[in-house]
Image (spheres, each protein chain N blue to C red):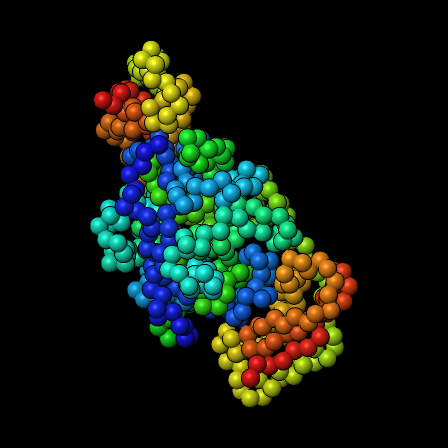
Length: 264
Length: 264
């Protein structure tokens, strides 16, 4: 087949917004959207931060986000990912053993370095001149560049009878046991913040009781690498807002939160 | 909120493939995917045209395509669409009267100029060194640049209970009546092609009886602009492969195919 695109080897997409999230590190980030009710905020950037551009969006319950894997090492090393194009990757859903083609996966190592996520829309607000879109269930890191936002339309997007290869069900979750000391440490941090009068509504520094449910739900996803099935006594640390949460595996399918530390 | 993306005003995405379709003109192109069973082909481009990159893809029934609105006038005029950012657009679903924000729509006039479509996967083949992905139901023009391909995963992508604003159901379709002369003209073109021995499997020059069903299904979508509710005697022409199909409105909700001409 002939084609006439010799002059279109790539396209340039503007960054229309930036994602603000309690998840500032990759470890613990949910592997798909809507697995955990993490709350986060998209800040639209100039010249796209005009209210007219989102009029009518609040009639939709869900949004598609398109975004750029800015934290990929290869993305920061080369402007074009072509040089480091990986043809096959190991999806976590296959236990990290089997490989599939990059186009048969939702891996971050795709040539476009572009992610897509459907999230719940919580609300839209303008605050101090900023246009903020509050969402629930995002699987994006803090500071992720947003390339596009569009409404979810179930008549077109929800294919009920699709056949989903190796990803035909939600990933299973672990039981999470909480060591009493860890919960006490968390409660003390929350109390100290209240005492210090630091409980503003800033996404990264505020901490509430409700955050504890999110933290345990994130750990229930088992953030450890794919060889996690093997029992290991290694201690893992997940960062959430301004605290580090430590956990270990006790038995098969059960994780225990053993400590919570405030980041200096 | 602070952010540290001052150096990331845009991102560059490689074109990984090109879409080959019987729809070579915008008029008649379905407004969403899966409204009509149009068959089309994605040709992967070097260096992405390696079979390894699609291994496992055939276990999925549906694919997400991400693509670039290359036929937008503004896209060809300016490399960056920012200069021509439209904050509000008129979605066809609102009859072309009411405006919504561009991020509350699936309009082509979005800053990213990026489209997304879920399509059915028909098959993957290598032919004469080309890696071809055959799909059904695409709403993309011929020669559309493909930015990414990934599997549809219903556990993550199919939100059944979403609230879909102004787009809560499939668009209604028109009845299509076929003038006997038009069908005779179509049959004669098919017969002539057979006689001339031109019935190879080339997507754009082959023409079969099955194409007639696709043509009438495309017209049943009513490709006319949003003021189509008004009865008009104007003749419209839709191009499909190498034929032009002429139709008019007879009464409210009914269109008639009045002629078929082979393109010289």
